[in-house]
Length: 313
Image 1 (cartoon, rainbow, N blue to C red):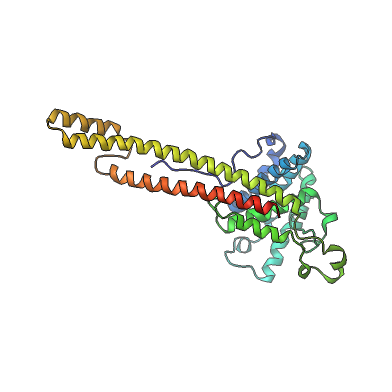
Image 2 (cartoon, one colour):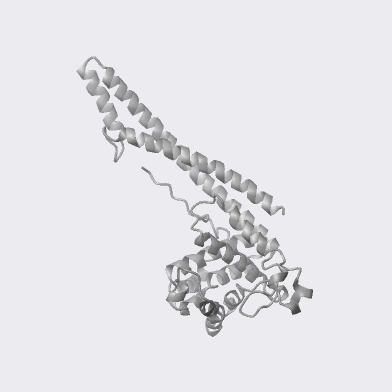
């Protein structure tokens, strides 16, 4: 059976900007990262670029933010693998080591003239508007806009990866979690910052709602891919239905020459992997796949409705 391949993020990312020349050197740096972190960096850059597009940012800003996003986790090159790839929750001591990837990445970039302009992505991507982030606990006024965008893209992709999403069904649950981070939380603030920072959440609500639009785009892309697969399944079922009709005519034929003719019609209608013994089972599999994909499309449209409602909060 033909397999349906859908990338979780739309492959048309970065379509507006020719970033290849600007990022060739920076992308080479990613080759030294472990596969998981490398893929995460690519995803965060994808989201960052597209969020910038929705914000109608200037091309220069978009390119800068996207490269910063590609390099935001470059400091993880020097985090011990047993901590970086630990499948269970980190201890407090391990988390303190993990947090150093921000300053390590910043220092790496600052020591390289080609990377120096993008050092802020590594340094600021875990800082929170309300001062509860790291490494320096700075607040909104001191966090660059591009870093605020990267932070949201980073958290979103981390949750998506952790939950192993393969489709956008129920992706709204992740966006609901991010909405909570956009709401001020007094419990997370130090006493000396309550008076000035209690109006801020961890992340920028305006930028978060831009992410909603990007997620809707990706969900629509998944719907489009799924509908193409549905069309494929429908075409295959029509072909197989003709084979069933040939079989029925062969079984009812009174002359051997007619029976042989219809059996030959069946044979030439088979595609690779199909034969007289298995085509009925293939019909069942196609019918089940068609039902499943139609159900997925309905759920994805419902998911878009939920995300749109969340965006109005």
